[in-house]
Image (tube, rainbow, N blue to C red; front, side):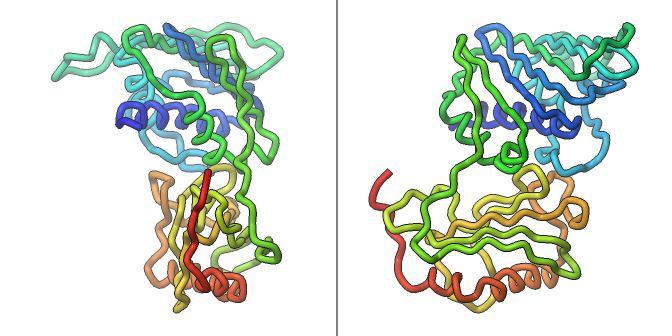
Length: 301
């Protein structure tokens, strides 16, 4: 995947993150040659201006990760094009527009963001972001995009969030990532409590020989979304081949607060990080030790 596509996918993830932050349970992305629309049924925003205002963020929560912001996402997706936002809240219907083409070649001066307009409320809530993509040709493979989304948002999808993509009149329902097949008797799933890290939900298993394992190692979620992918832990003194392991560790976002600003890692000290992985290692010692017994070879898929 080229860097431009990567940034565009990051942008889409930023909007999905924001929808989840707004407590949306239904999110639809509509993609045509001229417009991309992100539509959700969340609680909306009282100030849609902040969506197009660069370098602004409300606060860190368990759904934002990339830190690039909605405005930067719009710029990447539209190539300094136009965006229209309509947000429905319990108080009002807010409209916001922005034309980034006015600033594409600007090297100095402030950014003039139009003021939003407001209408009386309706009997539903949500936010609709319409982006003009006619200035740029996007070449994102839909299967590749869905594969990324179904893993990054697996926890949200398992909790009942409905994520759909409508492209060229074809509707795709994004489903939670399906765990690889494990060797018989080589799987454990526990909810465990730690006095420092809070409640941890841990699934760990040794992948069946020959089974594809694209997210090998330890994948850490924080609430509804992915925090870290394919970690080659779990510390300790064990000689572990992470290619044999597939694990999902879900942190409780209400008790685990040591997450960095970009939501792609944590702020634990080296000592605390070692303690975290040692705790996982000791809790699942018998199973993890089995992962060091032989070299894992993918024979297909």
